[in-house]
Image (cartoon, rainbow, N blue to C red):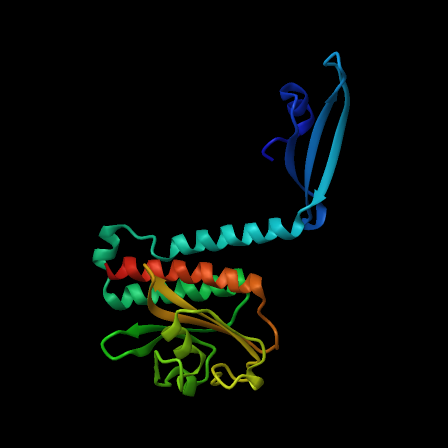
Length: 229
């Protein structure tokens, strides 16, 4: 869609018309039809071009799904929020984040920390799949001596670690982790926490993963802000 057959549209409008077509096996193409007229303005040909768009379409579908998941994080009415204790709001947020990470992004090792501005301490909120030592580790927003998480919180910059065994900043989170991706959680340009995901394979995270996690991280930050308000 949106046009199931662009040929009549191209003829009627005397201009190129295109549509997206889903094929078997989850493949996508974009079909563009261009009408050709002679000097008497009579239609002589239709030129149809197809372009493989599977990769970009699947990426956009995933981004749309991440945005929708983000909208669900704090999708509560004021009355519902008023009836919930702080612990209930936190549990709801953690449950939804864990579910989305697994279902949408295929991630099982997740750590989220919130920044206490009074102490500069990064307080663990969600430590799914992390070792007990990592889950209870004292970390602060500092570019040195506090691992990748502290660096990200201090600089506000995403950090991709392709090989944990070769990165001096990395401190073990999940047992056997070989790569990690950490993004800042920000509201209006201010860091309020960090989101870290890990994988047992080296080079597990690429530019696309960075984009997905950053988008979801912004949604998490907005949800935290909503729940706190």
